[in-house]
Length: 353
Image (cartoon, rainbow, N blue to C red; front, top):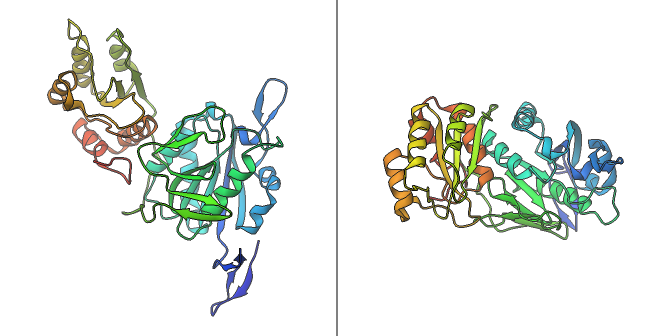
């Protein structure tokens, strides 16, 4: 869509809701599949629509921006892996100067992981990189897909939009703060321990937070996926750590409460942590509690482990962000000390310490 010519320099402009909005933004749509692009082909929903077909279902987007569409892949997000998110980040980097923003359609089940990974691969992006999808296929009459797709483009086209975001059910959420908290409802995503960045209402972007993307833009194109997430359960056998030592480069321990690691009578977990470190496996302690984060020094079951082994902790980071940051940090460090230092250094708003 091209706007009216105007201004001293002949810059393309348009008017929406009676307001001059400046030049028409160029937005690239990168489609990856997911529910939004699915059809029931006899064995349940399967991604089938192309990027161009998605755009054809929401013609109003042409009134918002000048859009180009590309198909990255067409997968249920259960089958999306770090290599796909690296591919997306590389594509954004390749054409970064040619576009004003990017919209990525993605399945909801791993969208929070995707957003967190892209947050670390495209650090401090001054241009918006917006992930969206839907709970119901865009084929269905009562789907949330059209509103989500249109809203994502509205936000991506806004002059103050920036950073890696998730757009869903009218809300703009920071990429390291998004978590899928409902499996069926349209308000599927929540912003964990951080305010919603903005809302899109009545065709307008209403901000709660502006200017939260600071620092130098840094782009990366590698993730180390050999990371094992271990959720502690009462009575779990510490032998799981020996499995981790043989199959991973890093282990995230989802501890109890604010950071409790079981000691039991034989100190098996402490010994397992020592063996992991001796083999060069990086260890991060997170909490399996959804809100308010960890504080290992609060109780003896966390304090002595942290002090003795100098373990970094995730504090109020989401599990998705912890996993993504660990995969990224492994690729930019070559020692345990460097890894721990990088992990505990805030990137954007992932850590509020």
